[in-house]
Length: 422
Ligand SMILES: [Mn+2]
Image (tube, rainbow, N blue to C red; front, side):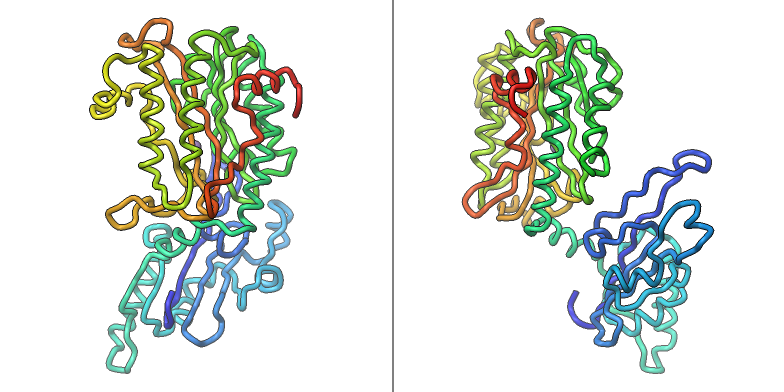
């Protein structure tokens, strides 16, 4: 922040779901990262102006009646006793206390556009200081977005964060295992989705980190298929993209399973192509590598596989140059992963893609998707989608695959589905 600065960081509220019911509360990731405070309506103010308090929390006050209906609130007392704030006030006092907390700080960090009342108050305070400038006070000279700093911090995970992400990966492993074991023709996609959600909660996770995708047959070619309402068909594949959220951290895992327990024919061949590309991409994750370079390598493997499969015709170089492969592989290979499933942190270092560095966590998730109505594709290959996705953390000399215990080699997947080895 630098000296003589104040940062205002605001937590999430509970949005209405319908009439008087609410969505489950999910704390704002930046607020959670800084405070560990998991209740709605809170604001944190951090100061480097030299005068106490350095860290002030505004929280919903304790209220016997409200707590009878909606549960425990740490309140002002808990904010200092249990969350380490130097000072705490009721959230209704935020606008009134802001002038005092801002003092004459020369730099203010605040994310505009999230809460109109705070934005407006900040403008009023600055304007008031300007009008009183003959009395020796002056408004802040800089208004900056705290996310520029916070998101860089969040991009590199510390050991405590990685421990949570390893535990999250293990819960996702168990959920995929129980789901793989129950797979059979005639089962509905939502039955598998329910098992995933059940294991996520049974192991203490918040639930799915994002809407679980259970996509049988041709639905796997719909990248964010979430209706999950069709029966599984013998001889087809089912793509499952599901991971738990644990203590705020997401895991993000995709495996593609054969509904009847056996990889066969063209489906097995497409699967092998994606797996080869995914393994090559994983080997390329190390400090100094870049996401575009890893993506290019992945595309090269996929295109060569697509040529062998007869999915495309021509020269690999030309197909890559013309981006013809995008018909069947239309998304990127990786994204950052952390408190958000598509996590924050810049993908660029100025004009260049940034170098990977130890502690960064990313996904590696190539796929091939052939729509059922794709008349350019050979008929036998239509209506098939495969994606294989792992979560990896960059280490000093390569990467650690957090989700390596979830099988992906065809023989291992088949054995897993027969319940030979959890
Ligand atoms: Mn992903």
